[in-house]
Image (cartoon, rainbow, N blue to C red; front, side):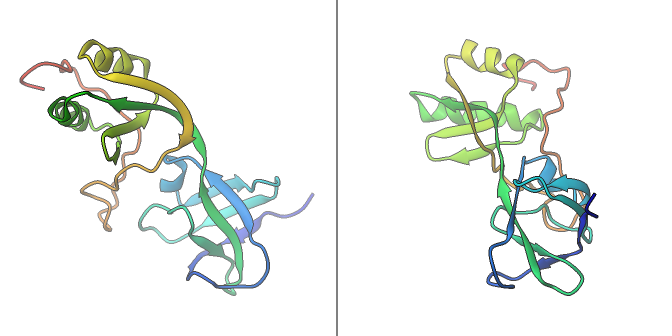
Length: 167
């Protein structure tokens, strides 16, 4: 059995020679900078990266010598794509989802979040259009992304109600 390739450094674009291994990771996985992962071709990779910001799709990782080895990619994940006929309703949805600490990818005319049947139902009951897709998810970094050591890509639900004026 082959030893895992030890990845300890983030590399600048264009570093190294040859075709790097591809490492598809979900949004939550990109926040964890240590641990065993597997490349697209099945090669074992051991991440031992310094604490810091989440990995970004397109980023290159390397070993102690700084040799480019692995290209980070955003893996496809089950998502909800939310749209509204009225921009104000979409803004209200973003407000309520943010109040619940739900990771969001904000695009022109739509919100994207990890699939959650409870949130899908609540959004649909508010009259929003909710489409299910399986695509890469790249949520907004959030207020704590720049070195504060806090990343919260998964939703955690509070006791408030989605449509409540106190939510």
